[in-house]
Amino acid sequence: MLVEIGHVGSVRPWYQDARENNRKIMGFGHRVYKAYDPRARVLAPLAKLLVKENPEMKTLFDVATALEYEVVSTLGKEKKIFPNVDFFSGIVYRGMEIDAEFFTPIFAVARVAGWTARILEYLKRNRIFRPRSIYVGPFDQKYIPIDQREGC
Image 1: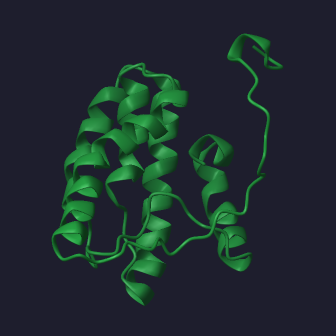
Image 2: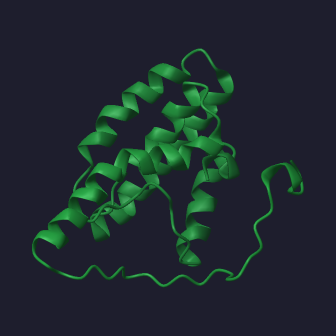
């Protein structure tokens, strides 16, 4: 998302367009924290430190802080929506030279313990777990080995 925005001058128009079109702004909002996520407060300075020597990364960080300002000054006041831990973690991972394709698995791995604990709580209470979302993707897809996939 930050790469798509591109530079600080594009933040406000991008944000206004996202709001007008009800587009999700990634890295904001949390079901528990109705104030600034304390984990994001830790990662923001770390991200700033990691981008210091890298102009491309500094631009990304500057876009992030400009977007943070826009969201906090509007949605923060209106709906108590603030940056969550994932907002700055992508910049931290990129600053650590981790490929973007690994961001989602890293985000997921960090949550497995919590997901597992939740399921164990459901089992302990003999409660059925019913996810709230419905899969809408394709079914009955044929498996194609990775070395035979297009673009590999």
